[in-house]
Image (cartoon, rainbow, N blue to C red; front, side, top):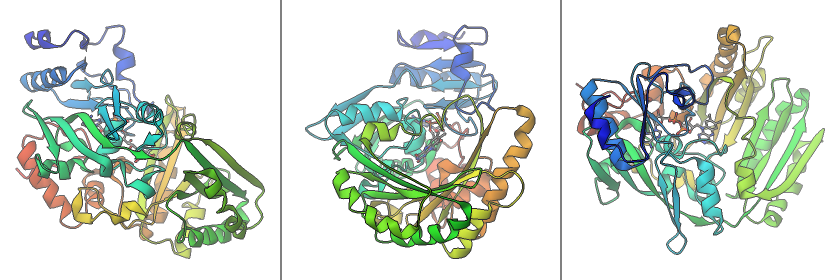
Length: 441
Ligand SMILES: Cc1cc2nc3c(=O)[nH]c(=O)nc-3n(C[C@H](O)[C@H](O)[C@H](O)COP(=O)(O)OP(=O)(O)OC[C@H]3O[C@@H](n4cnc5c(N)ncnc54)[C@H](O)[C@@H]3O)c2cc1C
């Protein structure tokens, strides 16, 4: 153990192989990830994060940064490196009068939602409550409130950041605005965020989910109608569609706001056709936000791919339904964008693809390591089938796509601007276990 650990605050902890808590701390969401950091520093304060960054640099160790641990590649866990574990920094403080949430860099979405909802407030957060605020927000952050209030990153007013050199700085529209731009969608490339300041919104506490199931032979016509209905959907509604492994299509929407207003959309949904099953349910916002916690649970082997689609022509619907063919087919889904997401100028943040109409995703889970290759191939085939219709990709939906994937996430001049920012804030690429923007030198 080096002398620098002495500067960890009292709740900070160093774990090395053999420590009782080591295995649990290195375990992340995707059970395929089985890496062994040389040490894990569980940070309890900003000072601990500074110590961890400096220690890693002194020892020449690769850094992985862990918040929720949901990166599908398990990028938070460096083999033989130093894992900076932010999970003890999970606090959320709400200022209801100013409608602000101050969220530590290791917090999970559920903590943010629960704390904000005590006041009927919320900000955009993802759909599974055990996902990390850190990784989700730094990549953009899609959720059921995004069409009303923008992505999670659009609601960040300021960041507190530990830089690659171990300095603590702030980024906002007025302080280090170049960094503020890059942190809004550029991922974990530019530093470790120890606190996010979020704008909250009065959203009430109630929601409505409307889902209609159909057999595969009706699916093409249902999806065409669903797509057309989406064009006039109010912002409170986020249209969703999913096709299960066994070929059942479920289409409908999630509504955040007064459920009675959401119910006014139900008659229009009759145009979809005659469903085999209808599920219309009101629930609290907090329950909506954890509704998919179990399907998205830990401890399974996982792989996923995604695309952004600016249009959904009939041919894309056919490709969505065929999923690349083969005997084994993956779950696939579509989620609507638009509304407030599209109103932010493309230049305003590193996040790109504001004109996205739907996000396509395919996710697959299994338990037997012997199936790794074949199961991943199934998801790749489905993603390849949709590729001709794709306009780009969400950085947080990238898996093993490499530099090509990162370039697809930041088209046009965005990529070059991010490289320049990397040169300025992390020229040695200390933070490279992420969807990496490499410095130019
Ligand atoms: C079940 C599930 C549901 C999801 N649902 C959604 C969704 O609804 N909407 C959506 O937009 N995305 C969603 N995602 C994708 C998700 O945004 C990414 O997987 C994201 O990387 C997860 O962040 P994390 O903090 O949990 O993961 P981690 O693995 O802990 O972090 C991922 C990366 O983010 C960086 N990072 C994390 N925290 C910090 C920090 N404080 N400072 C600096 N860098 C940091 C690091 O580079 C790290 O490698 C989902 C993923 C899963 C697995």
